[in-house]
Amino acid sequence: MVKAVIILDPEEHTRWVLRILLENEGYKVFCAATAEEARKILLEYKFHGLISEYWIGQDSALEVIKKFKELSPDGYVMMLANDDVQEHEYQEIINAGVDDFFVKPFPTRRILLHLQKGLRNHNEQNQSSAEFQAPQNQLGIIG
Image 1 (cartoon, rainbow, N blue to C red):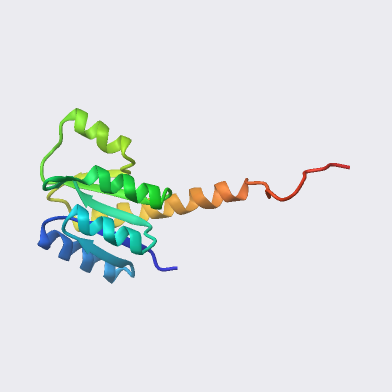
Image 2 (image 1 turned 90 degrees about the vertical axis):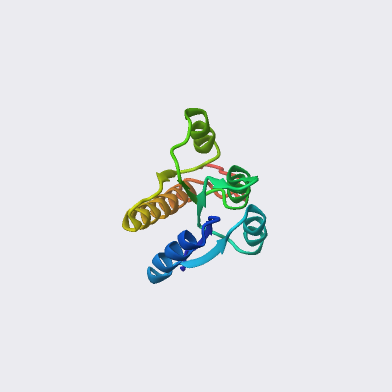
């Protein structure tokens, strides 16, 4: 199955680099420059991952992340930032459901490795939790 990833970053160059990197690895990639664009795209497709810049202008990336997690509760989220963030901001980021956090500039290979690992881990968690769920339509009578 092809994994779909959305990239939210106001910097065109960052979106372009990440798009090329991920498409070359076989991912279906959608890009957004604003929170509004990202929210529209999120409603159209089922995504496995989100890579988002922390600073996206007037809108908060955290609101987009919360919407992503609402629509894809098992999805992987990576946060990027131009500058380091304050401790209280970092706590908000993690509490919003972010799995990984990177400060720009970053090696693109590292982004790819973390995305692959994050998607793999989320997929394994989904499979193992599904293995332990009892069928809901059976009574569970013994003997």
